[in-house]
Length: 212
Image 1 (cartoon, rainbow, N blue to C red):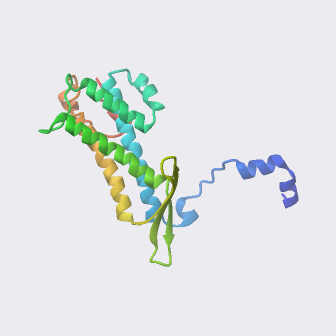
Image 2: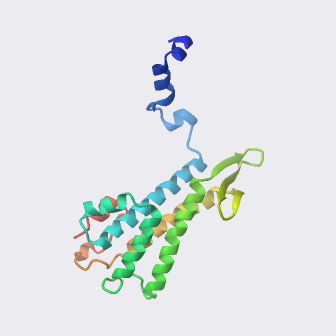
Image 3: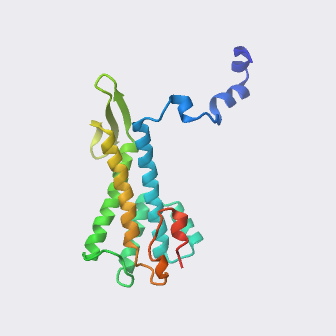
């Protein structure tokens, strides 16, 4: 097709320029081996989604409803709303059901758990909604840039140096909170058989299959 034919035909131009095309070209064929920065940002995304799935699963567990109905309820909730419902259900059930807090005060433990879950959201958002640049003139230092304009404070611009270990720590921190939520519910359902007394996976479907 000639350039004149391409630019002279709107339907062809529209399809080529605006439609999505799957190429099946591998990552390495496109840009070479994966780099640390994009890889660790990807891990943060995956870790946070795992946390959200675990949170959704145990909201449904606390609701005691049919799994399909529960999925319908949680599917369209924002993460913040899920945390709020999680908190409300805990306070509604804490005197009638058992939550695993070890030897610590139950309410204080949950308060810190809730805070840490919201902190995960804050840290994830800081990463996902920022721009990252590598400064090749300074040993490839990584610069995070974030611009915001809030009604209370007006324009704010953050520019800071970050490194791969710090970003990896964010991913690990988020994963650890998923595990804490699982441990929190180890003794929640007394009807569960002894062999099913632990949630052995953080995959949403696998958690659901242990429901009685």
